[in-house]
Length: 494
Image (tube, rainbow, N blue to C red; front, side, top):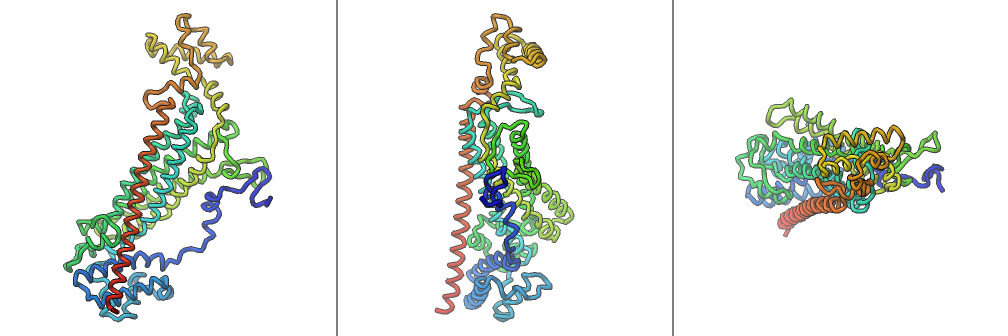
């Protein structure tokens, strides 16, 4: 076996999805920055010119020549502009090229009824679509792993931990269902933030709209938005969509980090409640015996990126007045891209870990038993028998102290201390029985775990359906826009 795939201690290489994120992506050639900027810009231009023509603002022949020039640039991936000086920004260099090639009467009409301010706000929304969609897709895939695991491990009894100490018996499935419920809430927040991506700023002009009879509803349709923004000042002044996305990623990142902490604890040599396959761990370049769940550390680092980005973006935006501002539209926005990418990577990595982790059921059950996790259940049974809870709490606490001091089983000491008439309270006091009976309050009883998994699945399915609808609308808009462009171009030559 190749030494690049195995380390002696480990028999396989890192899982391909993890390797792509951690080891391979940075080796790829970066995207051409000129094309990356101008492709969404030219998409807006196509819609704008079609609308201007339909509104009678630009003559069909002029529009056809202009659109043909734009299409030629797009087909060449904007190669003619790569070496063109851009002393006033890439867009003006692009517009200048069209004027030089087509003449001012044709190239010069492109910017009619709009500004770089509303153009930039529109391009931002188009550029956010793909990374936003990728993040939500990663989250729903992670959610599916969690709900599947909740069902599969609904009877794998383990301790719930509070303050790093065994608390009450639950199941690993119950834990995963709880994480799924939190993930769905975070998806709800991201979905709400994404609603702003469906609003079209185009038509707002520099800040006060335009006197030309443009039709923002038409560009809304051609670009796949749902509605035009009704206020021109808001359209160019606000980039709150960036803050809301970063806020959503920050909250999601907190969940990812906390779960990663749990998995780190449960895969430690001292408390190996979960077993990981070789493709989800790393070794050491010096210590041959090591099996390091290092992906969890990557999760923690990447999940924190959004918080830094949110802080920086918020600080930048807070320096500007409520109008179009570079601090808002350029400096603050610049932080969102790496944060969305890092958050998505963190979700993918944690999904891989959750998917590959296998509970060590025997050890989990033993930890639950040795941790006296049935103590609370015994106190509650005394309450049912008529003992005030605080008295029961005190009595069971003394049982726990005596059992711990003498190295004896909790149930054994309880049997000695409880009156004979309460002996029946000890029946079914093992952690598995206690966990199974905890059906109230969303407890770990199997029926409750399955119900929680069902609920999460329904909500995840709703998010997937919304994403499918959104993608279909974007695709249909792209096709309709291309058809409208082609119709104008062909109409001038027919």
